[in-house]
Image 1: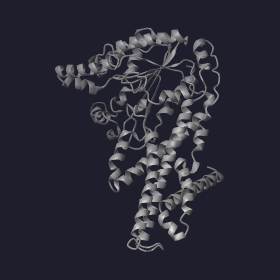
Image 2: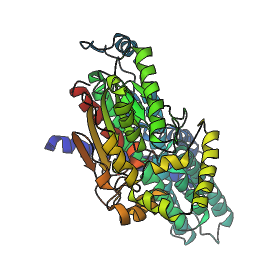
Image 3: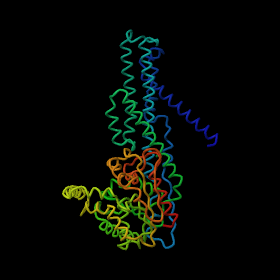
Image 4: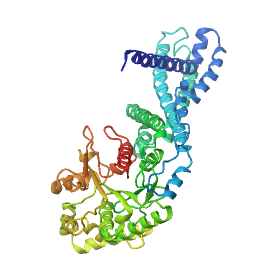
Length: 498
């Protein structure tokens, strides 16, 4: 980084610190106005601090306005017509509304979250100063009488200080509780439980602030990145994307299987459809549903073909549809994500050890739940059996790749079992015994398929789990940005002409 840029950055940081120090000073003076007014001899002077305090509470330091500025809607760009491409599909892409309303909402949310973090830091600083001030006054180091000499004055001062600091604290904590997506339920509950525990409440508050601040910084950078490349439409592929989910999940309208990934792709020009198939069915049954869905999409939009991105069992379903059911003429590429192409030895072991009666009981429970979620004819055991190593060996012999479709694959590694969310933190160790390095469910040797293969890891002890690859927990963590991974994956499809 050039020296002059470093100087500018340092200057901004110093200015920000000075502004925050001034804001904290206003809070401290108002909190201790009862005794400070006696020392200064101007009892009504501190009434002038009330407007400043209200201003700080509403928007501390005004430092986050740039978030809103940089999340304004941008003008769209017409999609070029590719030779032989689908006229209806391209026309639909051209007329798609250009204003990015979600970016505006994100900018406002980040502003509120950032302001909440600032208020909580001001609370910690001003509370520490107020406590030191009060102790000094009680012991007679200030010219306004000791606690024993003027108990009424100091009691009133303490009550005002508590009210002022409480207003700052609750203003900040409510903001981050309502706007932060990374705190999750766990840290929100911990924050409430530890709120009245001395020392622990300060530690937890520090964690809440750091988590929310990291989220603001990360999401702000993503806003800037998407704004910078908005005109490039780097994910505007020749053919639309078809996202195919894995086993035991569905394409819910309000709880997207793919987390924040689809919106990120759409911001960069992608057109997305979903498989809409059942959550638990044999590979052949899911493949039939996918083939019908692909035929529906191509017929209704005129797009001729789709690019499939399939996670977990969805990759096997898609391969079957291409090789056996004639879907290959309607598919340009197949990208499989953490798909068990060679099965899971762990599944073989479980089916071999668990008595048939218990298997049927578990299956009946699952099937009943899946029917309530929308499956018309779920078959838990059939889905599981198709994921065994033995079943996948037969599958690979009988289901060859189709010429004319480009195949690629991706896998990942969960480095430490404890860093995976339940149940992956439990299954990771068991799968490791049978399949070695894995993502919590599928062993690394089972991932590779096609002309290109990528194996993803993240620095440190965390790793990338089976669920992380579809943004299941909507979680940001160091070393891997799942949304940007998919943006670059789709951008590569575009560069290849798909």
